[in-house]
Length: 94
Image 1 (cartoon, rainbow, N blue to C red):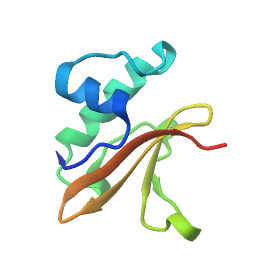
Image 2: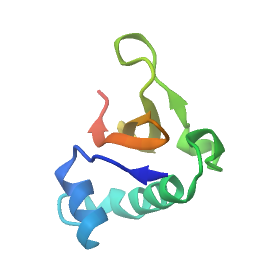
Image 3: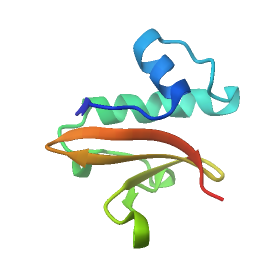
């Protein structure tokens, strides 16, 4: 899938320049794996992820936004529009 827009500055730096500054060092390897899976997937439903990634769509006021677990409260979230990833973010849920 193509990355259309990235909200998180650290994620943008990682994608554009392979620069991990701006992402906690304990999350960096997992974030790289998740980004690789997203870019290689044809659709979000086709992401072959281990159960620990907990790939799912959110509900409530964020209905339709996808979430992938990184570690603890940290998640990569994004929307899909016209087959492209928009609003890619790395956020602490709680």
